[in-house]
Structures are given as structure tokens and as C-alpha cells.
Amino acid sequence: MWYYMSRMLRISKLTDYAILVMVELTRNGDMLSSHAVAERVGIELPTASKVLKLLAGHGLLASYRGANGGYRANRSASDISVAEVIEAIEGPVAMTECSVEEGLCSQEDQCGLRGNWQRISLAVKQALQVVSLAEMSAPHSPNKPPLNITTLGV
Image (cartoon, rainbow, N blue to C red; front, side):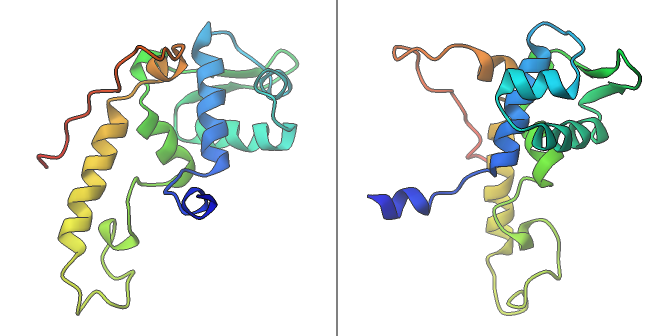
């Protein structure tokens, strides 16, 4: 069983932290310092600072300098998708390098899978785009049905 757990497709820890940070910053709309964010989310200050800068650089947060400065979400939790946060930290949502850009794979000339990888990548991206931070922050209920994601028709 450990083999399967270590081989799963997953986002990076930094992206996981970024989603936690965004949920915290959209919770009540307050402006928070990087110290306050790190403390509330339970991560180290250098990690929080890195995440905050990346999120601000992609327009998800506004940053304010000065003694009373900090970070504030630019939109509400219901208006920010999980895909946007992932892209701010990881780059484009893609299952393979070749599904994003031509010329990155040495097998490209002999391989006919690029189009299908692009379709799969698009389906994954669309699935992540329909999940908002508001949904992510809602308490989980065992009786709650799974998210209804219908993107396989791409």
C-alpha cells in the first residue's frame, strides 16, 4: 500500500500551503501581515513570505507596505478557483510538459500522444476551475456527495 501512496499524482506542498493561505485571507477579508498569516496557517515565516509574494505576483493578493502593511485577497473566496492558485505557484495545469508547449520532449516527433495529453490536461484544469476557495473552506461532511465534475467531453 505504501507504494501507491508514494506514487500518487499530487500538487506540491507549497501549493497546498498557498490554498491554505488564500482560504485564510478570504475568510473575512482582513489585511494580514506575513507573520500573522504564517501563525494562523501554521507554516514557517519564510514559506509564508514566499507563497504570499507568488500569489501577489499573480494578482490574487494585493500587498501593502509599511508598518501597518500586509496582504489582502483581491476577490472573494467564491470568485477564486483552485486552478488559479495552483497556476500561481506551479504554472500551467498540465499532466505532461508536451501538453503545454511544443519542443519540450525528445520523443515528440515519434509520439502521437500529445493531443490526448492536451485533452486530459484540459479536463483536469476545467475540473479545478469549478472548485472555488469557498468550497474548499467549507467543512467536510461524510454525507456530502462528491463534487459533480463533468469535463470528460472535452
